[in-house]
Length: 171
Image 1 (cartoon, rainbow, N blue to C red):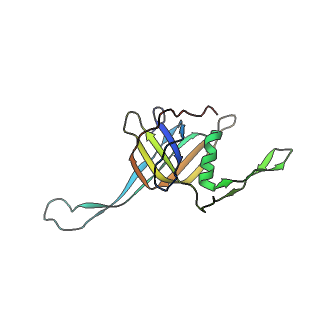
Image 2 (cartoon, helix red, strand yellow):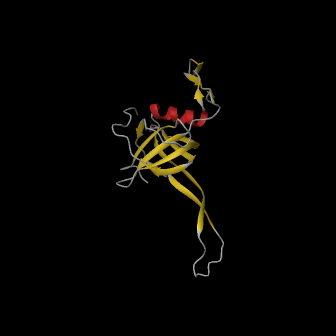
Image 3 (cartoon, rainbow, N blue to C red):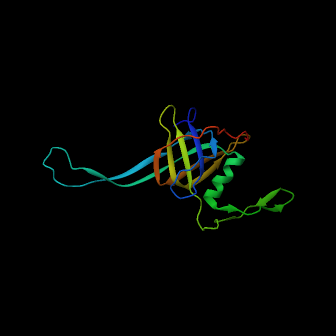
């Protein structure tokens, strides 16, 4: 869905798959979060004109969004994708280039995130247990840097948005 009336809030999960209190709110260009249900027909003969019952075998969530790469948001997304960043080391004073090293966190796992999404006037949904599937940066000459993120995750549920969160003033 296009981002004109969509509210997206997010945070880092303390426990995998458990939605907590969102700490950030971002503006987006578009988003694609959804619930995936893996259903299987029972295959039993019922004597009816319609087929047998379908059972849900598993649930998962996936999707993503496209937004501007704001400095205070993109750091968390990079940490979720690559691990914690060590102190950046200056490689060249003439170009100002730095070397960035990332390591997995103390628990040897990457953090899982949750997102709360309100589309237009619909019910807010949360997407939990999300891990970064892909992260892409793009920009045209003399334009703002965009980031396109996709996630794979655990579940979708009804959510309540946090009040008082605002979008970062940084561009």
